Image (cartoon, rainbow, N blue to C red; front, side):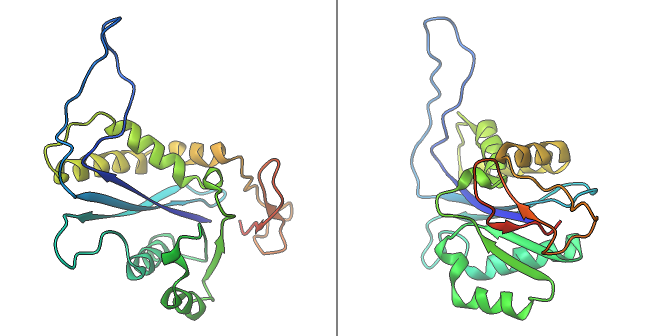
Length: 211
């Protein structure tokens, strides 16, 4: 089961907590200029009995003419192919209803590879059901209050944190636990579409459990 989501970071850092003298709020001065942005697409990958994985791709936007501001459909296609190559076997992709996820070329790619790829859309406005959101929270917390001198420094900080998480499958597992989703294998041990629903407390079963 593969959950995908995107995030981005501009030259203005996210706010984060830190230590300081009582009554004196620490201030981090940043440039706050430039149109650059770092876009990240990530996949948290789960299979009962195996090590959880994190796969990601990063794109820098520096404001150049004709430069894409974020990921295009070919980037998503390549990321899915990369996940299939690294993970092997069948892929069940779960992601949101981002407009780029619904374009015709991607739908054609999904249909052409239906023998190993199944795609489900999350309900509208349901980021709490996507464990990849937990990964973004950890990354933002790490780069909070970073006074980056240029876009490359932000990219390096993001890559460093994502690489650390890749070596911590327990952290990736924790992001799934935070969603409340249940991915327990079927009682008969088989991972087919009839095995039962993937559910969270308080929500209707909307995704099949293909464990």
